[in-house]
Image (spheres, rainbow, N blue to C red):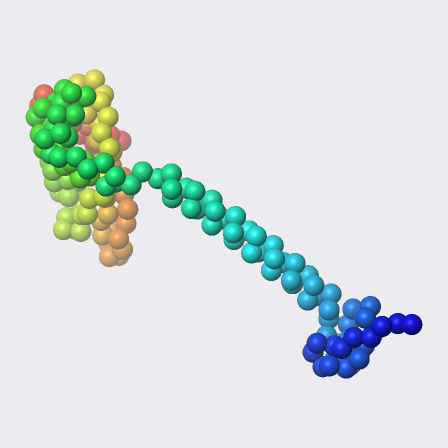
Length: 162
C-alpha cells in the first residue's frame, strides 16, 4: 500500500514518492537541491568568518605599542644612527614631516594629503621610507597611495625611489 502526503503548496494528497505535485506542479526535487545549496552556503560563510576572525586576531594594530617621542628618537638613533632624522619622527605613525611636505608639494591638491603610516629601513648611508597616505585625485576620489623615498643621513636630501 502506497503512502500519501500533502503537497506543501496546494495541500492536495499525492504519493509520497512524487517528485512533482500532479495538481499544482510544485517541484519537490528542486526544493531539496535548494536546501542543500543553502546549507552549503551557510557552511562556506561560517568558514570565511572563522578565517577572517583569525586573520584580524593576528594583525598587529598601529596603537599596540605606545611609546614616547624620546624613546622613539632613542630607538631610531640606536638602530639607524641618524640623529638629525630620528628627532623628527612621530612615535604614533612613524611619519617624518619633511617627507610629508615633499609628498604634498608633488600633489595637485596638497591639502588632500592624509598620512596613514610610514615604515623605515636602513640602506647604507640613507634611510628608506615607505609612506602610505590618502590623497584626492582629479575626480575628487580619495585614493590610497604608497611612496618609496630615500633620505640621506648626512645631507637630509630626499629622493624618490622609482
